[in-house]
Amino acid sequence: MFTFLTKPVLKKLAWIYTIVILLLVTLPLNGEKQVLGKLNANYVLHIRLDYLSHGLLFIPWVLLCWHGGKPDNPRKKLLILWWIAGLAFAAFCEYLQLLLPYRTFNINDLLANMLGVLLGTLLVYGYPNLPDKIA
Image: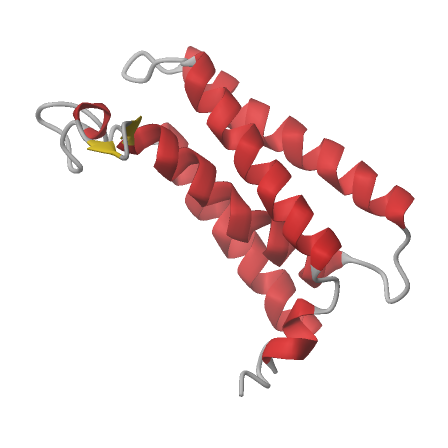
């Protein structure tokens, strides 16, 4: 079905998605006069839309990074190291906003980022051969 999802393609997609995440956390997108409006004023099931979007943003990132960069015979220990690296990237994305005058650091965004990394890692653990099953 998706036979084009080879390891090199997934690796390229992971890099592109990483760049997209970095752009989303550094560009002035949220606010009254910004492109996306006020995301923090909208709710889905009593959860602020910006928190939900932060969490959902990192799930595919974990999947793309893992399946695009993992060795052929990975071990659980390696998955734990990737999870820690993912948490570090999620934290970096939020702490980066401290350096930008038009962005604000929010601990809830940080927690949502980390939850997305955790959910993505659990998907990788539960479905280790996901690209093979899709293809």
